Image 1: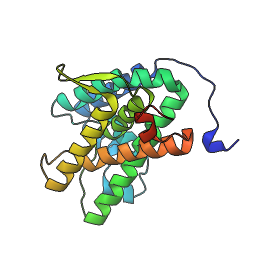
Image 2 (image 1 turned 60 degrees about the vertical axis):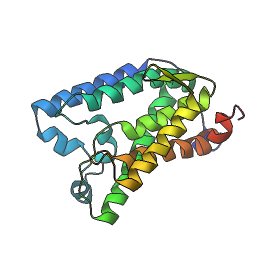
Image 3 (image 1 turned 180 degrees about the vertical axis):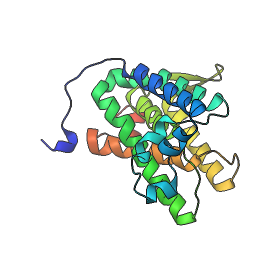
Image 4 (image 1 turned 45 degrees about the vertical axis):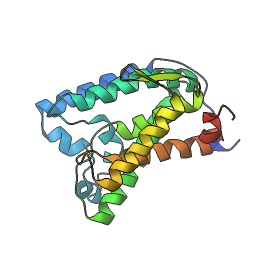
Amino acid sequence: MNILRRPFRYSFNSLVFYLVGITVLVNLAQRTFRETTFYLAMIPLCVLRGWIWQFVTYVFTHDFRGWSHILFNMLGLFIFGIQVERRMGSKEFLLYYLVTGALAGVASFAAYYITGTNAVLMGASGALFAVELAFAAFYPDAIIYIWGIIPLRAPVMVLGFTALELFFSFTGIQQGVAHLTHLFGFAAGWLYFLVRFRINPWRAFRGRH
C-alpha cells in the first residue's frame, strides 16, 4: 500500500483536549515569558536563520494582548475537532492538524517572503480551517447555527467563511488578521483529503464520496 495512504490503527483518545491544553499553556507562557513568542511564533527572518520548527509551533501561539484570539480558536477546535477526531481516529487527526497547520505556515512564509512582509504569524486558525473543512466533508448534512441563530449546512458554512476570507484578502478589510493563512489552511485540508483519503471534498459536500 502507498505509504501516503497507509491508515493508522483506529483509536480515540480525546486528543483535542490535549491540543487545547497545550495551546493554553503556551499562551500562558507567552504572557509570562515574552521570548516564548519570539521562539515559537512564525517570524520570517527567524525562519531564514533556520528556525524551521516555527512552521509547526506557530499553531500553538496566539496573541497575548487579549483573550478573544485563543478563546474563539479553541472553542472552534473543541466543537469541530472532537467530531473530526472521532471520525478519523486520534493519530490521523493529530497528523492532519499538524500537517495542514504546517503547510499553511509554509505557504504564508512564501507569501511573506515574496511581498517582503516580516509579520509575526500566530494562531491555530489555518489548521482550524482545515478541521472545519474535514467536519463538513464527513458530516455534510450537519446543521451549524451561526451566532446561535442562523442555521447553515456545514459545507455552506465552510465555503461561506472561505469566500469571506477571499474577500477580506483582496479588499484589505480587517487588517492584522492572517486571512491568507486561513485560505492556505483550507487548501491544505482539501489537498490532504485528495492525497491521503482519495476523497474529493466537493463531492463529499454533496453527500457523494
